[in-house]
Amino acid sequence: SIDNTSTGAYSFTLGPNPIDHATLNDVADDDTENDLTLNLGAFVQAEDNDGDKVIAQADDIVATVDDDMPKLTDTPVTFTVDEDFLANGIDDNSQPGDVTDGSATASGNVTGLFLSGADTPLTYSMVSGTDAAAALDGLPSLTSGDATVLYNLTGNTLTAYVGTLTPENTVFTFSIDNTSTGAYSFTLGPNPIDHATLNDVADDDTENDLTLNLGAFVQA
Image 1: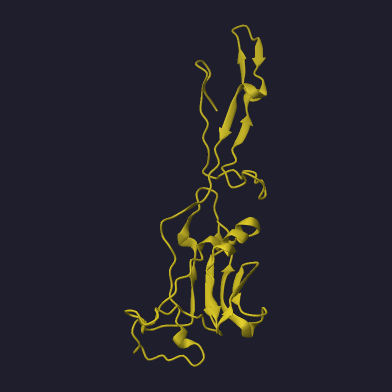
Image 2: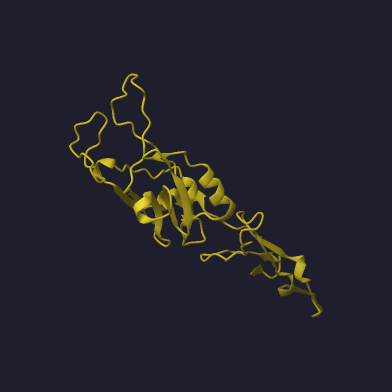
């Protein structure tokens, strides 16, 4: 707005609703703040004392609207699943290193990983393309029953398996179950993971837990 017709003072106020900035659809530099330029000069004119007017050119007044984009928080998502609850598992909490109140499944949501910024709401999913390839490359080399564990990422589900990709050959699944709420689930089994042994060194005869870092598969 022109707030003072004598001094030419103007003001520009953004919001409270944000502008949808264009996406580059996964091409180079898509995940950057894609700024938007507004040419407003053609709306402004000046008039002299005897009524003569001149109108500004459109690009004489340029407003650049800086985009906002989501960012990561410092709040990791952690959970524990327990092989005691697979077939033939021993759920008595008596073994060294065992956990109490275990389960072969875990669920929650990933919303705490991200801040949305102004352009709400966020949509949550598994990564794709080169990001998916990099995430898969980052997974550890595991075995189940001495068979090599393979990985498959289809849509919003990551599956670890042996042999062929069938339910009975599954080692675990991790999935984003609701892209709006960020709900996830992790299911261990039915096949167990071969945990490393310490080969009779100190603390060998304990339940040697295994950590899987899965964050690189999740995006908002």
